[in-house]
Structures are given as C-alpha cells and as structure tokens.
Length: 179
Figure 1 (cartoon, rainbow, N blue to C red):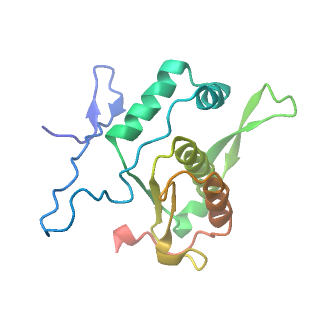
Figure 2: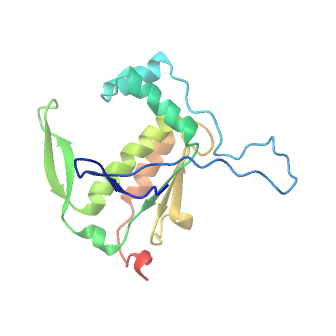
C-alpha cells in the first residue's frame, strides 16, 4: 500500500503514519535490555489529565495521546534551520491583552517553527515520550545538531532547556536536502 500523501473525497491532502516494529537484535547481546527510547509514557494520573484539560484536551483525547506514545516509542523531528526560514511568511497565534482572546500575527518561518517545537517539547516532557529534535544545518550551540526531550525518563526541566537552546539558534545556510 502507498503511504504517501493522499486525497480524500473532498480533495483535502492527508498523510498516514505507519508504526514500524522495533528491530530484532542479531548481535547476541541481552535482548531483555531495552534501548533508551523504549520506556513507558507517563501514567494518566488525575494531575496529568488536569494539565491536558487546561490546554483544551478532553479526557478521551488525553488518553489517545498516551496510546500514541505507546505505539510510537520514539518521535524524531527534522527542523529546517536554513536561511529561507528568515522569510516573513509564517503565522503565530498569540494571546491578546485580554487573555481569553487569540490573535494571528505575521512571523518568520523560524519563529513559527520555534513555537511549534517548543510546544511539542513541552508535550513530550509532560507525557514522558522520548523525542529527538534534529537540525538540518549545523548550529554552533547545539552539539551534533540535535537535542532531545524525555530521553532518560521524565525530566521537567528538559522542555525549558530545549526552548533555551532553540532560542539561541539563528537560521542560516542552504537547505542540505537540495545539495
């Protein structure tokens, strides 16, 4: 079956995610020792459900987030930090002075992706769902062009560390996929 983008009856593009089973160890090492990214996501405690409810998630969707973390034990993000991300053709949703209202404002593509990555880093930390964020281009302040959240279990400070790291990255260079 072709899992590329498809069109529904309404000509709306959508993509399908396909879980890939974990590889079987052929080296003879202890197969009972799980890799770092195979860990239980956070239990759905009343406190966690409350935090997700405050973000607008109903209880059923909160439970689905945990199920998703079980099915996909590792998330990998590829972040474009090339010079084209400096174009001002993005959008962000921000709170107005009346915190119950939201407004869409113009932004650079980089500001838009920063907000998205920061949100998902926070969500990964909250759910104890290991996530690797990989930059396309080298960044002086990020070793190996990547950072991760929930890689070694739950650590609430990782989301703010990820936010801090990403705030110090300036987009530049070409998109290496075109080289």
